[in-house]
Length: 243
Image (cartoon, rainbow, N blue to C red; front, side, top):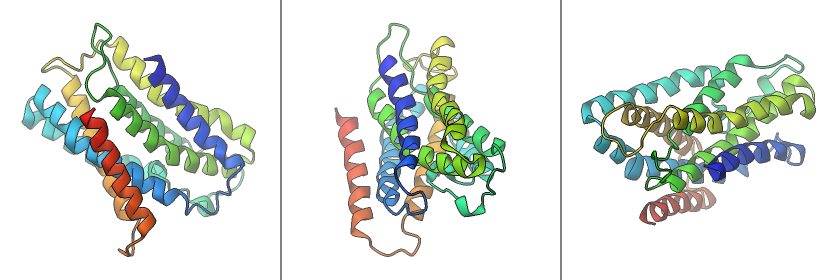
């Protein structure tokens, strides 16, 4: 569990720290990473997480939770402004405008829910696909953390003032892991709350990943770098499921 907590926290802090060295106004380098993470997430969801949720819980009930997660994420993005898939909107931010509470709150809730499915059984055994899911969550948070930090630095006026709020976002997914652990969720038990939670996060992942994949090529032009990144994300997710 310690490895999961460390990776989730460090991936967000590391990505946010990049804003000190990488110009936030030019983020074309992020698009292949977004394509990679979007393809990885949608593949992981459809080939592992959703089948697992349907196996562990009542398929009709799980379906409703998938819908709730999908449209719930649509509501969250009204407040987060799409930061979870790399949107910065720095030009629309007012300098020294203070902490964007709604944006930060929606992102934190989003990350907390994603972390909450990373649980072990009561004997400490990790379920199949644990590290594949952990990798997907961490990859997804990298562009989100970069975009969030760009917004925070613009609104708060300095990197130092923005860093504690980035740390709050970085702690959200690890706190989700700990909350599920101490709540006693069992990822191998049929019925109960875990399949519903997993269905909810599947809907969340499906919304985010498909949005990313549609947005990286808004003009529907073939871009070799994005295509290769998408295929790489697809391939890595399939490989991770096979291991």
